[in-house]
Length: 408
Image (cartoon, rainbow, N blue to C red; front, side, top):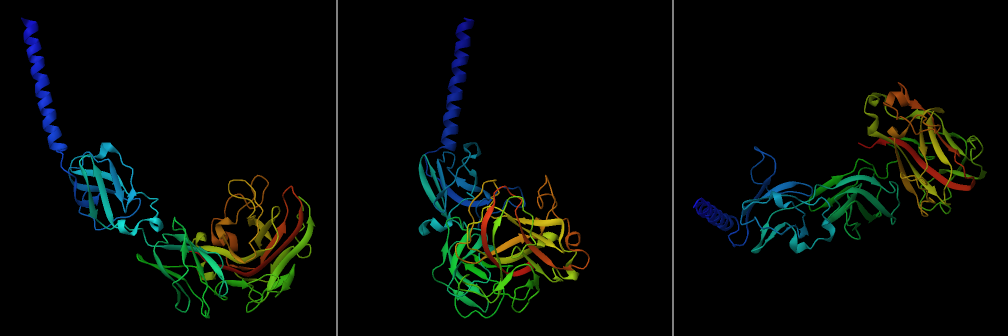
């Protein structure tokens, strides 16, 4: 009798649970297609109001109804991974993919959010846009008209034009990579002014800190309008040997430098200038990371051993150790500049102490005054050293437009 009563109670519990399950299923998965009513921020109030736009990498909440069985989510037609534990009938918490390749998206899918569930799909019109473009560098800041240059940065998507100093715009033959980090453009004729460049796309305008075609700002030596060369190597103006050169420049040309040879003072192995102002005295309390040494470089032959040591006033306490053939991962390449000039950017934070027996690899200079002294005035010395094992059979390079300028 007790067994019979227990079985009846158990059966009743199962029936009630089943009915509740069916009710819950009907409530959450009614079989109706999904509906999206809005997107809101994922953070608590006061940021829980409806969003008007969102961008890659941003976590949002898709709100609506019949969303619990979502199987696929797309932003601008690009699939977004999601955690099914963050689904409910009314909400989906999801992060818009940070790697969204805007350059290769189908234009018809732009500014849409699509949710596919077990019972159907819906497309909601909503702006999904990248952050504004950012310009960080340029392959040659003194490139002549007709030359192809690369602008580096982020979010170079749907670019309408590149504007050079003097408001000279280029609207054709603009080529960005799929990740939007590089943009190729041909330098237009007629540039006589100097100043920033701009990249204009459908999301706004990016203006560079770098100054294109500027032969004055921060220039310590260029062999022409500002010539502070003292000794060490030859000066040339042979543009046929180094195509794309502007006026005079310095050449480092030599042969037979064995491993362990520190004889930078030998002829043609250094550029040593007279004193000039590295950073204006009024700015010596600025963060050291705001400034960089720049110059244009043309390397004709493969460079795979030896380095440029760069110092102020021959002081090796802090020096820049420039070896473009040695990659950050420790591997080596045969480096040259591909038959053209390129801009080298060495942040002043790259001037470092000696560590583990290697100059310029230790702690960075903590401030401008620590590196440059209280006046910021002095000569610059660019010296070819070979602390490496392999000998340098020959070296042929040219350097121009040595300058220290703001990068932030």
